[in-house]
Amino acid sequence: MISRVLALFAVLIAIAGAAPAAAQSAGLDAPPAPNNYADKTTWLCWPGMDGSACDTDLTTTVIQSSGAMTIEPFKADPRANIDCFYVYPTVSTDPGVLATMAAEPAETRVVAQQFARFGASCRLFAPLYRQFTVTALAAAMAGHPLSNGARPITPYLDVLNAWNYYLAHENGGRGVVLIGHSQGSIILTELIKREIDGKTVQARLVSAILMGTNLVVPKGADVGGDFKSIPLCHSATQLGCVIAYGSFRDTSPPPANSRFGRPRSPETGMVSACVNPANLTGGEGGLHSYFAAGSEMIGPSGQAPVSWVKGKTVSTPFVSLPGLLSARCVSTPDFNYLAIHVNADPGSPRTSNINGDLIVGGGVVLKDWGLHLIDANLAMGNLVGIVAAEGATYAAHSH
View (tube, rainbow, N blue to C red):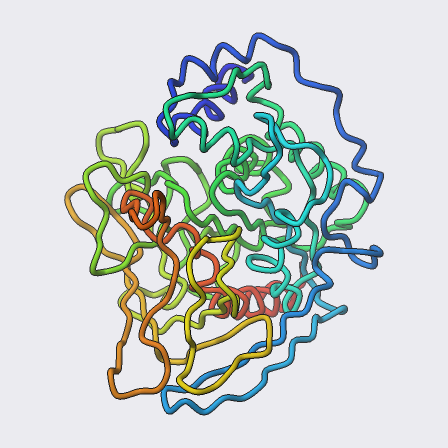
């Protein structure tokens, strides 16, 4: 088991171009002492917790193509009948290879962008964990990986311990949705493989939402790759299924060196899963997006804020743009990916542009990352609605 998990987390370094051997060798060190997840300071979100990162302002300005603006308030549902358990992506700016257990602005910001809005459909649980940092990722991308005595298994073990604490002390037989992005999705994929798939607890799995990752399925099939008994979702009333995707602009499809849209380890007959949150049954669908009104995404983007509508100012933390974006899953001989189309209207006072590309060096777009930074924002409203429908179905089935 340990060697397989070490190999998994070597991928987190290999994603950025570092030598996998460097991450593998780090596995010779013993993992650090486990976190005490009974201490609520080890959680970003926990129901009723003072200072929960999920208790954030999600008020949204809805901007129509005409330029008309309305304010959409947000209210969590404290009586939601299912839970959501979230593992965040690579955001920590701590100086080492592994993050500390301090809840810093990077972690609280990503919760607002990717998770807090699910509070309309489920109770929210999000552990802190000692993840691989942006610092380590940037160093690896620059070809100078940091000395890595950091124990590649640590992030997985932290999330596993948090999951087991949640199950033992708070789940109480409730249905649960697992939600992750990027590094979080990689960890949750392994957790599902080892702790849920084919186990008794699978009956409590409402769904898994694994964004910005390469979930492996056999070509033309829904199950049998990474997961042996958990299929891809085709309906918002389907339980025990998974939504997975990586997003790219339809005008900038995955290049040959793409990090998403295909299995990282080539396997005959296997592809990267694409499930369209805007149309689970297949085909194109409209995206119900929620974007930060400023320039931030899962972290500070360094990009100029979008001018959302001519002559008007947005004062809320988020914006929503009905009808601007649509999505469909595209399959080519080399890639499966979620293609994002901007329904531009040059005559509209509303923007026909969105930020979301990974840009370095003063303007170089890293096309191999696609729209990874906004995978969650693009479909947030769709996903929250899906989880609400799943919760109703779960309750109707008298679990």
